[in-house]
Image: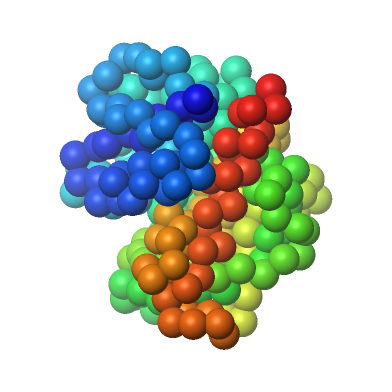
Length: 232
């Protein structure tokens, strides 16, 4: 069975949700701790949302220097699929596994809403189960979710097809080019601000035209990694 590690940091909130999403797609979730020095032989890693270390210094800045992140960086450089969700996305930028950074929302307030996204890139470990240009809806909740990068970096991300998700209808936090998620050059590392792990089960996801709380668009993010691991 494919094993996917979920790292818990002090202040993590959504690690349990990520483990449940992994279980729902038929993989085995593996609990990992920020102080570990071993990834326990997992086939992929998820850095969950939350407020690691109380968001001191900058969101994700301290977590990026946790003992286990040295292992994550080495494994990611070797091709291991790594997904960073919200605070996990912030960690990936702080660890320089992804370019750019996340800053306070341009309206200065925490935002929580069901957010429409466009899948811009399917050639990644976490989006192969989607169609390019497909629009999905997953929850978004952050106070510092504005994606920023210098003009050359943004141009490179756009030219290389490394913008993975983009906000549709509204840019909820002032992200440059409406960027909601990006990938590394190899496509095995993806970070996004919205929370796919909160859209995996009927009765608990976003509202759809079919029924209230029936949205499960986030499930395919985790299924993509599972199917990719099985194909290797």
